[in-house]
Length: 518
Image 1 (cartoon, rainbow, N blue to C red):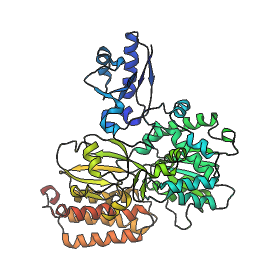
Image 2: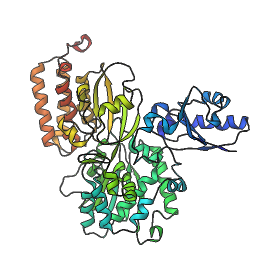
Image 3: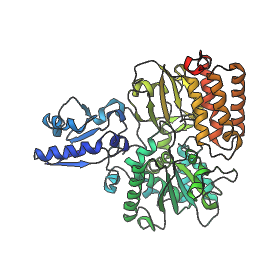
C-alpha cells in the first residue's frame, strides 16, 4: 500500500527546508521498504508551521510541523505513515482551529491540490466557473460579477463589475486582461501563495474576464522577486493550453484567450496600474496621467481590464456558485472574503481568509496569537508601507473598507504588520518618507521632492531641532503630497506618517538620545 505524503513547494516552505525534508522522507521510506508518494502541494497558510507535512489517512490528512530533516526518522518510528501521534503532530489538518475557522473561497484549493495537476484542479471544482461562462452571453457574466459585490482586492477597492462593463462597452478590435501581480507591499504574500499553490484559479479567472469583455489576450505582471511563482505560472499556462482550457476555441467554444507571464524589474511603483502598463510596453515604469483611464486606453492604447491576483481569482467561484452566493459573505459594501496576511511581530504568522466584518483584534489575537515577543502590542500597520498605523484601542474596528475609512485607515491588500511596545513610531514615520524617496518614479514634484524634504524634516524632529516648527512643516508637507501627487505613491505616503503622529504623539517628543545628539 502506497501512502501519499504532502510536502509544500510554496516559497515560504522552501525557505524553511521543505526540499530537504521531502528528500529525507523518500530516503527514510526506502530504508524501511515503505511505499510513499510525495505530492508537492501549495501552502495551507499556517506559515509558522512550515514545512507542514501531511499524511493521507482514512480519517483525513494528518499534519506534522514544522518538520526538519532530522525529525524524519523519529516520525517514521512513531507511526508517521499511519498518522500516529508525535511531538510534531497537530492532528487532522482540517481540524486545526487556525484553519478550520476560516471561510475559504478564493483559497479553497490552496494547500490541498497538486498546483500543476489539472485533474486535481477539476476534481476540486476547478473550471466549473469557466465551463458555465462559456455558455453565457458576455454581458451576463459582467452582470453576475457586478451582482456579487466584488471590489478590487489590490487596495483601491473599485467595483470590479463596473470596470469590466466599461471595457465590455468599449469598441476595439483588440482588448486585454492584465493581472497586476506586483505584490510589493510589506507583509503581503497572498498573491504569491495563490500563484504558487493554485495557479489554475488565476488562469480561470482571467479567461472568464476575457470572455466577459471580449479580450483575447492576457498578461500576468509578476514581480521579479517571485521566481517560483513565475515558473509555476508558466508551466500551468503550458499545461492548460495543451488541455484546451486556454488558446483557440476553448473547449470547443468560439472563444479564444491567450495568456503570457511578464516579469517586472523590481520597482514598487509598478504596482500602480499605469506604471505597470508602461513596464509591460517595454518602457521605464512611470505613472501616466489620467484620464484616459486604462479601461478606455490601456495596454498599447487599447481597452484593458486591470485587476490584481485576488480579484481575478475570486471570479471562478462567483461564476460557479453565483453572485448571490458570494455576496452573502461580508458586510455593508464589502462583500465576499479577503485573504488577510499576518506578519511582523506575531506568534502565528500566515494567511487567514475570512469574510469582511471580522475585527482586526480577532485576526491578530485569535488567529495570530498576539506578539511573538510576548510583549504588549502597541501598533499595527494595515495595507502595506503606505497604510495607516492604528493603536491597540482601534483594533475592534471591523475589517471592511468603509469602517476603516472612518478611522482614517485602509484595508488595502489585506496586509497586517504587528509591532510591540518597543517600536519607535517617529522612526516608522521617517521610514515611510524614506521608502517613498527610494521608490518614487520621479514624475511628479510632490512625491519626488516632498518625500526627500519629509526625511529631512523627520530627522530634525527626531534630533530635537525646533520640533514644534518642524511638526508644522511636516503636516503642511503631507497635505501637499496628498493633494498634489500624481498617484497613490506620493498621495498615500502621508497616511502612515500622520497616523503615527496622531496616535503616538509622545514618540515625536522623546528626549534626544545621546548618540543621536553627537
